[in-house]
Every structure is written in C-alpha cells, then in structure tokens.
Image (cartoon, rainbow, N blue to C red; front, top):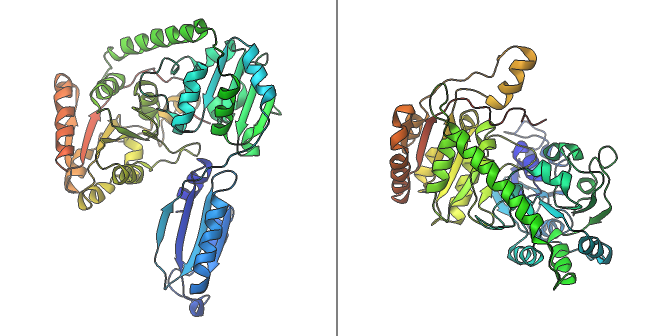
Length: 454
C-alpha cells in the first residue's frame, strides 16, 4: 500500500485512503498488526488524521476532501480503529488559478513555431481550446488520447527534433525530469513557458539545464482556456504543424518497415503491437504495465480518446496492471480494456485473473514474453558484460490464466499468420465474459536502443 500511495503521489492522483487500526485500548499491547501507520504515510500524504470517535468521522472526512481539492492533487490518509470498515475512495478535484496571462499571450502571438508538451489530461474544453489555437502538441502520461486517435495537431514522433526547432515551448503540466532528460532537450534559444500546480515540479532542474521565460503556478486547463480566449481570431502558420506531421508520417513509415523485419527468434514485437492496435475496438482503454514492451507500445499504439491510456506515471511502479484494469472495467463495463504487460511486470499482478473471473470483469492481457528484463539488460550487458538477474523464462502464462478461470492463448512464430484470428477470438471471449491472456513470444529488436530510464 505504501508503494501504491507513493506512485499516486508522483502521478498527482487525488486519493483518499481510509485504513483500519487496532482498537484504542489495545494499542501498544501487542494487538494483531498494531504498527505506527501514521509515520509511514505522513511523508507521502498532504493530510493524515486518526479518527478516534464516531462524532469525528464527518468533520475529519470533510477536511480531507477540502485538502484534496486545493492546490496540487494528492493523497489523504485517515486512520479508523477496528470498529470501522476499510474504504478506498477515488476523488477528482480541480484547482483554478488566477494568473495574469497578458505576457504569455503576447509571447505565443508573436512567435511562429509553437510547441506544447502535455503531462496530464485537462478535459474536453481544453481540447477545443487547443484545436482553436492550432498549435502542435506532444501528449505524454495521462494526456495521451486527449486529442483523439488521429488529430492533425498530435505529434507522436521526433519530439527531440521538434523541441530543438521550436521558437516557443509550453510545458503544460510536463516536468523536466528523466522523461525530458532533465531539461537538456530544450533549446536554450526558445521561449519557454511552464505551467504547473506544484511549484517544485514547475521549476524542476531549471537551475541546471534550462530556464523558463515565464513560470506560472496554477491550473493548466484554466490557463489554456484563457490563452485561447486571448488569442481568439488569431491563426498560426500551418506549415510548422504540417512539417512536423510529415516527419511523424515518415517516422511511422520507418517503424512499419522495422515491424516487417524478422527477429532471430519468435515474433517481432512491433508487428504484434501494430496488428493489435489495428484490431482494438474504438472504445478501448489501454493499461500499460511494463518496461521495454510497453515502451514500444507507447510509440505504436494510439489511445482512442481522453483517459484511455493508464500507466504508473513518473514513479514507474511495476505491477499496476491488474488493479488499473479492474478499476477501468468497473468504471466502463462496456469498454474493451487491454493490459499491455511485459513478462517481468506480469508476475506482480497475474493473480488478478482470479479477481477478473470472480467479479465478472473481463479484460484482455497482451503479454510481450521475451524471457528477459529487456529494458535493463539492453544497457547492463554492454556496460557490465553480464546479463545477471535479467534473464527470465518463456513461462506458460496462458496456463496460469486458465488456472484462475480465464482463457489463455500461446502465440509463437508458427502462429503469425493466425494472429488476427486469435486476437479476434480473444475479443469475442472477452465480450462473452471471460478474461483472456495472450502469451506472445517475442524476439529482440533495436527499436529502443539507449532508452533506459534513469
């Protein structure tokens, strides 16, 4: 639970966790699981409290909700004693800043090659605002899918090159951590506007590799709506967006060519991801839980709409797949929910197939099984000359899923011509109420060389 709360903290996911504790009279007397839980959660949560009587419940919960709705979204931990039940409640909150945007509007108006990097999803109104502005965007994290599947403004490839060429870059909730090489990918000659609710994230590493022209602590969604209103009637040159889109198409064409290459053993993972992406339903929700295979999926798969891509966020906690998929299916029972697993990360939550079966929440798991922690091995072997602790096995994960009451399919090179039929069969089985696991044996490619995350 501590790891999950830390992951939620770094992903800025508003969360209220209500936990049980030993009865007050038994505290410190050796009661079952009587530990100092508050000390564990105080470093992670915005607000922690112990509820010691019934009359404290309502005011304490109200206070926790108020804290959750202010500033940067975060976690609240309330400790109830043994007479209470254990609850987990997801909260959604919004905070609207009130910053003056005249200077930022001027900057965006006068430059020709603008570029926006998003780190979070900000709603339908923001999508309309972006479309009215006509500024090309790169979407990361929870903002993936915000512009739909095939928006002309959404640039998916060649981000580094675009950042070097841009006259102005707007970091809309995006943080200059390892995902942006700590800010080193930003052009020092570019105007940089950064907007974030959290001051520490707003200026992360700005004293080392980059420096903002304007830094705004406030709500990104509100900022974009006001920028759009301030620039109403102004259109930006389309050749910049068109050039980026052409580069996008060229890169995707190269990726398709790489997907057609034969690997030394088993199936090409890029080919598998492309085929599955083509066959996914238009209401699909994608849950990402893994390293190398998921990293490839982020470049190949196209989320169908807003909040249709779920991943661990900046903390990168492996094992979120089963829980995230369960939550997505419960919230959207009619949608097709896919979990893209690496074979290493699958081990953390494959037991949730029992949960999927018992609670009738069918999902489809796509497992890229290369018998290796590939994201680590790729850099470890050249540097250290050893693959120690990176090797796994081509385990029969499909049999594990069957043991939990689900359906399982093993897909190897000999099944390549039947891949489409197997995926469609999995979709049919899922619609009939069964959780399905596709255990796809994949080979090695150089698609992600040099992409270790540290």
